[in-house]
Amino acid sequence: MARIRTIKPSFWADGAVAAMSRDARLLCIGLISFSDDQGRFVASIPAITGYVYPHDEVTSRQVRSWLAEVEKAGLISLYEVDGLRYGWFPKYRTHQRISHPQPSPLPPPQEVLFQ
Image 1: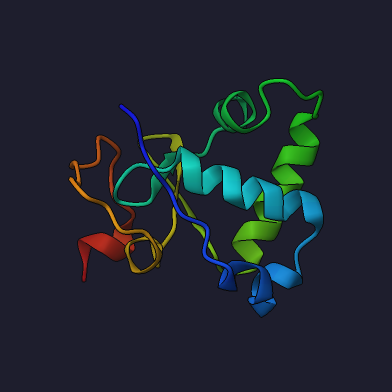
Image 2: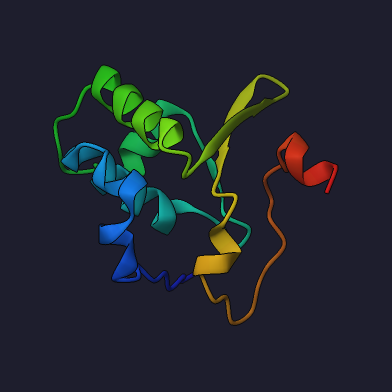
């Protein structure tokens, strides 16, 4: 299913984004595109590498490091359900306008269950 995602100009001026390395910023944009309509994504390193870097030679260690940077910046939250890793952009729907939102096939993080 085609998805249209938006990167607002204010993304680049955000202090948390500016504090990340260039490669972590690229990963963050890739994860925005990878995310479903609820801002959730599969956070296994092979899934991320295959989606965001299909033509690049990047190591699992590099992707893991950049992912940690994005999480440390507070832009994503990583979580695990039944032994599988997922990620979530807590402010996703604030920044993305979804025309015809579809329910997420991925399980929600605990924060969402208790809101």
